[in-house]
Image (spheres, rainbow, N blue to C red):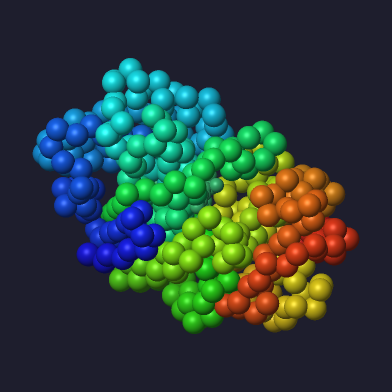
Amino acid sequence: MEKLTVTLGERSYPISIAFGLLNSPDAFLPLKSGEYAMIVTNKTLDSLYSTRVKSTLTKMGVKVDEIILPDGEQYKTLAILDTIFTALLEKNHPRSTTLIALGGGVIGDLTGFAAACYQRGVRFIQAPTSLLSQIDSSVGGKTAVNHPLGKNMIGAFYQPISVIIDLDSLKTLPVRQFSSGLAEIIKYGIILDYDFFCWLEKNISKLFEFDEKTISYCILHCCELKAKIIAIDEKETNGQRALLNLGHTFGHAIETELGYGSWLHGEAIAVGIVMAAKTAELIGQFDNNDTKRILNLLRQANLPTKGPAKMAAEAYLPHMMRDKKVVNNQLNLVLPKSIGNAELYTNISHEVVLKAIKQCLHTD
Ligand code: NAD
Ligand code: GLY
């Protein structure tokens, strides 16, 4: 088993990575006999993984309940959050309860926010089951729901007490979802780690073949990169964590405009990364050959590299101006400088952004 720590003083927590962890009582420590837990999951994951989590917790003597939510990004809402609170109250869950997020990023973000709010804060464990949630969303304590006017706009920074990554769960993940996770993996290479980007260029086919050693290394490495960033900029205040948003200002515009769940998060981010690279090229900060390498890797990951045909270039900026990085009505964007190195640029001109977007649209 691989283990690492997100170092945040008293709120530090372990990330455990191995096959079969959902069956392991050790993975669920420090839960103990007599304590309450609520599994929060969706219909899809309930049929696949809830039985094993319940059985592990029951063996430990934990009193376990479950709430099963509908499946999809369109359910990452305040209304669904309320159903979690109702389930907790109906079952009399006390302040000492622990919520267990069993699912992808949608379940993780919802559960974390519910944990931050219920009785002003209870413990929660991330048990991520999608590739995207295992390498990104389960680590770092960003929790949120969507609003019709903007993605992840209502939420809190609230750290889990542990992250349990059972690699077995990837075996049932649909391949389109696997590709979606690869978008955030490629992002790490572009913003932080040139060697990892090169490693991905060499190993992408092995990832699709589900080569166990390759996939374990990839997930461990991404978690290490993210844990390092969280330790130095937990609440995105000094520019380090903001780098993780490469492509997100454009991508969130696509998700919001098309309706949540229409494009997968990773698909929107893939296009957003290309738009960011094009913007960086236009301001003379990025080499076109590096954009070509990024395009090539995204295509190998079966990800889109052009914006949706039904979204006009002019439709992006109104959404982008609601981005959380906007300050004093100025558009601030994470842009790559070279592969392995990115920066937060302030007050980017709308004309340049529009021009970059236009170069990344479907023309057919
Ligand atoms: P998701 O949670 O919708 O899961 C994708 C789909 O795969 C769902 O239908 C889910 O039921 C299914 N699924 C998950 N695991 C499965 C498995 N093992 N077997 C079969 N099916 C499985 O989407 P996601 O890509 O995991 O996460 C995207 C969400 O994460 C977005 O809402 C995004 O905003 C958020 N996110 C948050 C952060 C953060 O730091 N908090 C970071 C990145 C993304
Ligand atoms: N996924 C962006 C962040 O965690 O900050």
